[in-house]
Every structure is written in C-alpha cells, then in structure tokens.
Amino acid sequence: MSDKPHFARTNLADFACQADKSRGRLVDEPSSPTRSPFQRDRDRIVHSTAFRRMKHKTQVFVYHEGDHYRTRLTHSIEVAQIARSLARAFRVDEDLAEALALSHDFGHTPFGHTGEEALNEVMQDFGGFDHNAQSLRIATDLKRRYAAFDGLNLSWETLEGLVKHNGPIIVEAMVGEVPSSILNFNQKFDLWLESHSSIEAQCAAIADDIAYNAHDLDDGLRADLFNLEDIAELPLASDSLAQVKSLYPDLDASRITHEIVRRQITAMVEDVISETNRRLKALAPKSADDVRHAGQTIVAFSPEMAKAEKAIKAFLFENMYRAPSVMAVRKNAHQIVVDLFDCYFSGEAEMPKEWGMDWQQADAKLDEGKRARTVCDFIAGMTDRYAILEHQRLFDVTPNLG
Image 1 (cartoon, rainbow, N blue to C red):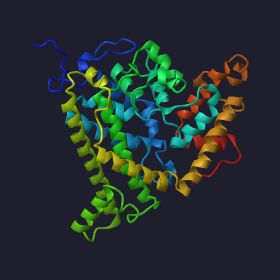
Image 2: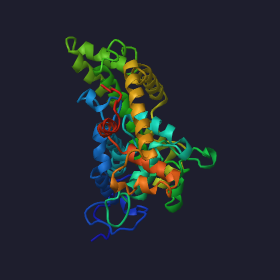
Image 3: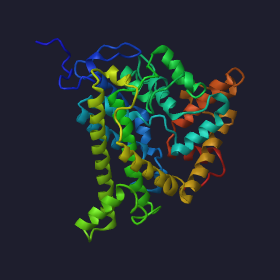
Image 4: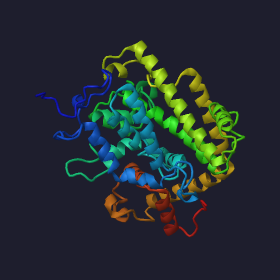
C-alpha cells in the first residue's frame, strides 16, 4: 500500500502545486485525512464571514439597483468556474485555483472601487488602503473565529497567490508602494514576493479579467448604459453579434446579449489555453518553482487577444465605469464612506464592542495610526447595505444612491 496521502494526485503536471508537498501554514496544524491542504483552504474561505459579506458588496451597481447585477460574491463564483476550467486544461490543482478565485476580492470595500478610493484618501497619513493588502489582513489576522489562530491560517501557496494577485512585488523598486501589512507578514512567513506566482494563481488572475470583461458588458447592456449597436464594433462582440444574427435572425435582445457574453468567454478561455500551452512548451517547467522563477507570466492571452481585451476594457471604462449615472452614485457613495470614517475616528460614534475599542476611554492612550487602521478595517468589511444603514443612523441626511 502506498504511504502517500490519499488526496495526493498522480495525474497532475510536474509544474503544478502538489498538495502533499505544500510549504505548510504559519501555525502548524495536523493534516486532514480526507482533504488536501488546498481543499481545506477553499472550504475555510467559503465558510468565512468575509465570503458571505461579498453578497452585498458592489461590483459596479449598488445592491438595490437590481437583483440581476453582479455582486462581489457572484463575480467571484464566476471567476472560480473559469479558473477551475483553466486549471483542468493545464492539469494543475483545481482546488487551489478555485480557492484563490473565491478569495481574490476579500479585501474590497463597500461600493466597489469607490469605497477603496475613499478609504485610501482618508488613510493617506496612516499608510493608505489597498484592497490586495486588505485581503491578506483578512486571511491572516482580522478573521478571529478559530481557537488556535487568528485569520484562516491558509496554506503558503494560497497566501502567495493572494498577495501576488497582480504579479511579483519587487520590494526594492517599489519602495513606498508596498503596503506595510504585506511586508510585515512576509517577515514572518516568506511568500517570495519578488517571484511570479504559481500556475494556479495565474489561472485565477486571468479568469478575473475574462469574467468581468464579459459580465460587465452584460450588466451594462442590462442597465441601458449602451446597446447592442454600441458594441457592434468591439472585438469579439462584433463577430459574435454577426454570427448570432445570421443563425438566429429573429432572436430577442436578451438572448442575443447572453450569446455574445458566453461566446466571448469561450473565445478568451480557448485563447488562454492555446497561448499558455505554447509558453509551457517553450519554457518546459519541471516544477512549480520553475514557474515562479520563469521571469514571465505563463498563463496569458495571445498578443491579438490581449489587444482585443484592452479595447473592451477601454470601452467599459468610458461607457460604463465613467457613465454619468454611475459617477453620480459613486460621488454619493464616496461621501458616505468619508462621513463614516470621520464619525468613528473622531469618537462621535462608537464601533461595535467586538472591535475591542471604547473610543471615549481609549482615545488618549491609543496610537492614532492604530486607531485609524481599526476604523478603516471596520468600514472596509461593511456591505453596501450596512454602510447605508449606519450612515442613516448617524446622520440626518444620507446621500441618495437610488
């Protein structure tokens, strides 16, 4: 009988992260007889309050604008589906790719990037705010549910993928840009900041791009920010639109939209698989560490698809993210976040007792930076709905987000 753990997979590529060879966790734990380390990570992520709260966190549209628009939670689930498909195609660990996809937006604030910009603004004197660093803080410190450790005590491979979500962090070249929380944690548990991440993490990262490019087109069409004629000249969308109209000349707009979105996802996934296999063949990595030290991203679009993807992003930026109706909501959402921070930081309003701070008694003793970060952590964890309700409770007038 083999002495390998039963979850060890023998059909994975040499360059995959091998669960039975994980670099472990910051706090040692007994291994599970039924789940790999990456399966346990995924399960802890799914059962966390941070995951549940994404249900009411903005992707682009605030939750009450419609039931069918993407939220951070539904977006993350869609990213996970694409990430698993890519991981399967490359014969790498699907559980790790899924764990990273499901947790990649942990650190996002209420009201999407607007909330992040507002918190970064009020935190300028205290180290700023970065959603990627916040994801790490949630995973390693802020979630306090387990008896033996703070955070989720995720495996090295999952934490590495979370931190290097946007690629290597070249510490010396990025002085002042790398959040202190990342640097401080790295002192305790070296995540190889300056190397690339695993194939699994790269699958999750590009799945994020594929998902929001396609689904933001869907949500933008649903919100009437643009129409089918507006996207007729976009790369991918134009070909899909012509194909669908040729095959189904009497199809209604709703079905046409769905056909365009699903065909765009398929085209992008197939392109990534083709381009990545080409790069894998050229580089011939023999281990996960060969991937990390390859000096380039391996999971990628072809040059032609990268150009098309850039054009789609530019269209969405101009016609959706900067649409007048969206900008009006963003302005009011920004004000809500700033108001809440000022109110809690000044001590005019008390935070829940589980945050362990009695502002009225502690303000003379508490370091200002620590106080600001605690308020920031509290607000960053809010859902859109809770932030609005708190503002209504604390202020006579709350900006309209409807």
